[in-house]
Length: 199
Image (tube, rainbow, N blue to C red):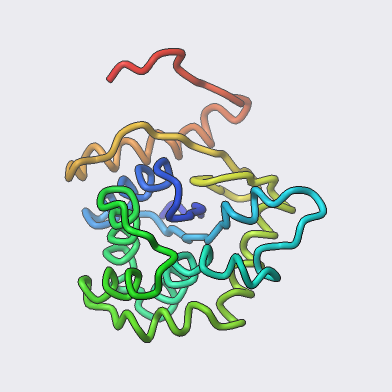
């Protein structure tokens, strides 16, 4: 079984693409042990010397959905992938504001997760500490700067996928396997970027 981690923040459309591929492949039985790691894009964009988002009450709402994802991941693991994708979809397909507790709770309720309970727990010091710990480890130890970043052992790679699986689990598995294969077959490949998109 292949073990790896991947970062997320619901604000990023490229994280949405990658996590949809992951969820689709895992749902179809991909033999991977995946650790989902919260990473705050708000914190990543704090200017040097600025107050960290976890210490800034005005930024608490920016961390709400991320905190809700952590609570579902830890307390409702069987429903995590559904809730995870639903939150991405709410943000990027429906244009909903995931800084609003009622919106996050409603999205979670639709996939069978107690939304109000999760939202209340998402704002607790313990969950915020979990997000901070994951973010600071990724940024400080692995130089992670964004999402989605795939982490295998001590190697971290930012990946930007331009398409979604559109319900094709076989495509999702091939796509993710291709990303994972590069860790082993091309460890010296630093950047591979098309100048034009052939879509």
